[in-house]
Amino acid sequence: MTARLRFREIAPVLSFLAMVESASAHAHLKSASPAPDSVVETAPQDVRIAFSEAIEPSLSAITIVGPKGQVATAGKAFVDRAAPATLVVKLSQPLPPGAYEARWRCVGMDSHVMRGSYHFQVRP
Ligand SMILES: [Cu+2]
Image (cartoon, rainbow, N blue to C red; front, top):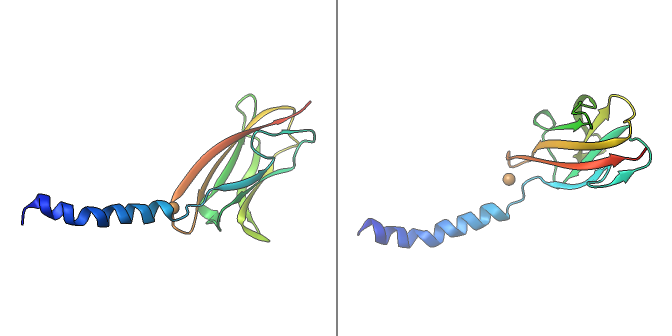
């Protein structure tokens, strides 16, 4: 049997495995407060991101970066006691008006590291 034939035989198996892998859920952002691309009137006290599944707190993080590139978060993000899929981070002070970027990283049950970011604005 040639190597080529052998590959033909296993190719369907490989593509099936690839499908299973992509169909298995990584933890991803489901919703957030402030919401992505939102404009808020009142400066938030914290930022909360709800993921699609429970996450590993020690390997997950949220950083809020302000208009001048300053980090606006106080301390490490933690998992909400009442919601194991929600990561919360406190802000160091009520956010001054401006545009903010929320950068997040999380590790779900399948141990994949997922990252993303979104923007929101605090209105003057
Ligand atoms: Cu995954």
